[in-house]
Image (cartoon, rainbow over all chains, first blue to last red; front, side):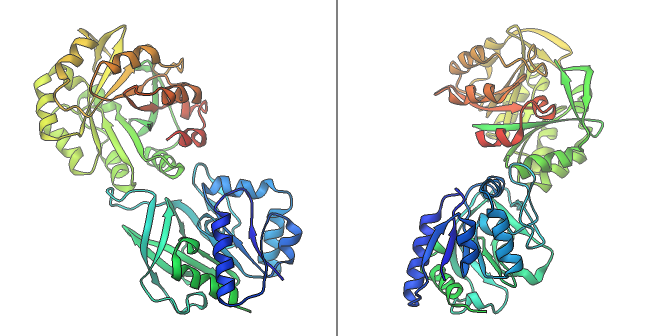
Length: 213
Length: 239
């Protein structure tokens, strides 16, 4: 069975697919990496990666525009409970609601919202862009072999906010503490870009690919 | 280009005036704080706030509300209305306002303006309300015989951070700003211009944005957003 990288016109697919191929190769995994928007292929995949670039609104509307894609993703995640890895806005789409550009509904898989980073420190620029230290909140399967305070690559102006602390597996400090990674059962996402985070990012992708429930 | 969504506050509420006339005032449902949050969440980084009670009475009436907005959101707040003394300016700077807008006070007391620009470098904006080439004062209730050109010549070397240029004939009428004249004037001046007044459509703003080397730093958009003529999700893309 293959690993699907969801293509819904958001961009940033190639670097994600490329990094996955390298990660798969590193662990001698035979799964095929397929970039696709085909609901049928997605349903049959073993795991999926949901990338995301641009605004929450544009990304969610992009998914909705492709017939059957929203349903296929809901089916995959909620009913089949197969693993999904959301990257950046891909992770943000797990939330119930996003406010970027205009209030927009998300998948609602994780109870949370996506709001603009609102640090009291007005000198910190948006987007939050570049390498930053990630604080691991607990021992978590996809972070095995990752050291606490490892550097990951971020680029975002909006942050995932949830009151459910148990879903927060990593944070990053940018004026305030911001969620860097969330997980809930089969659902996992990072605000940073593992595909742009060199060795540590690849390790996370490898852990995700290796993991079997 | 900087796009400043505007919040005009009177008696604690968001309002808009037509041609600066308090008799032609519309109140809006959202509180100023809700409105600021909405602009912030949508993606704007700057807002323009005018305390209309302050502008009318020369006192800072809605200070507490505006202070909350400045301190609550990572927004650059340009604030005006009723700012008449160095102490007034200091009060806003201390709580984190980005730019302080002087209108009436700058026109009535040019030494005060010069003094303020020296004390608060790059923090003072001058709002010039223009009708047929002449400046207007104090919530637009008073006319002057000062021509815009002669006034700008006087203040050009003070270190004013920007000129907020409002064509009163157009403000709140949504008829499209007097873009051509404003740009021509701005090109003769070293201080960057911000166009305010009467922007009525996304087309107007695109037009302003497309002009190269225009010395137009930004646009203030008010009534058109509140009335739904400009959709903020389209507007935010022009930042």
